[in-house]
Length: 416
Image 1 (cartoon, helix red, strand yellow):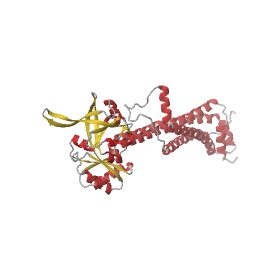
Image 2 (image 1 turned 30 degrees about the vertical axis):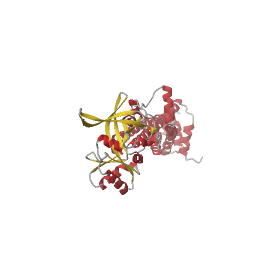
Image 3 (image 1 turned 120 degrees about the vertical axis):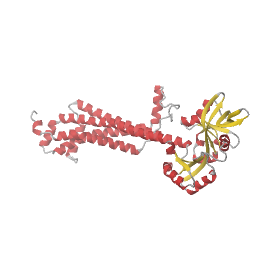
Image 4 (image 1 turned 90 degrees about the vertical axis):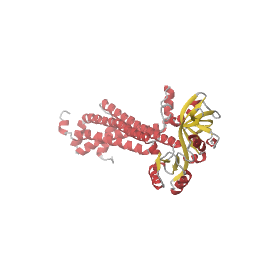
């Protein structure tokens, strides 16, 4: 009795049993459509966020936040440069030298190409997370002059080797011998195996000691570049440009966003496209409310006419039916948010269960970067989706409510 009259009538109509059961069926269908649309939108965006986070973390487990390289391919005087960069910019937490090159690995009659990276184990642990991904052996097993190697788990499986076995590494740099020009070859002992969880790295990357790499790839005292770790990886671009301007000489400074720009740009584009497509599902469900309210207005013609006769203004009649549409939409959106949040938070349980029941593997490791379905629920996405669905619901109620407010009492009651 303390509610405004249009609100009270609207809520009463929402709870009342309808003479036309088909209208109730359409209302339920509209509500279910909103529930499914909002649930799907929250879940898909959470999964896309999870993919982006996992890719970023796994890539940065192997890549660096920023890299300094020389334009001629060999960075000399890197010790002084490393100290200068770390001392001049407090945002640079650590720097580590590396030598990179492509090579062929052979063992037990198996052969495979790989990207070989020469590192200083103690310095590398300050800029990357390789040691955290070791499944057998240790990164500290890489010592200067011992010619030991650490392989990705898929690469080790391809070569059929385990810790303690030997592999032959063939570098593209040639050596002149009495037999002619032959590739540089060296036998390495496998001292460790790592697993990042990204097939690209697990299948095609190997680590050796920095000094062994310089001898193998004939870089002399120079290195390929310096890998930097920053205090804020999301500011790698601006910080990298500032570092490039502060250095004396000509250097190429790149960051992880440039090295993997196409991948992250594609993910961002997919998120936008998926949001638009799934928003259309929410829009269709919301505008199903139009048909529900149009049929309800037709069913309640006499009631509207009596209310108008009793003095209810057209704006009040309009508000009555807006309240009904908003209530239907609010219930559907609330249930959709609950369902979407629950599914997004438990996607790591639901997907394996479906895979076991169907006997199907959704994400094969040799096809996709990530072989499990991650999820990252963001409050901002939930709020944005809820607001969008609510706005569409309100818009869907306007035309039927306006049509109800145009009802003429005399014509509506003529045949009653």
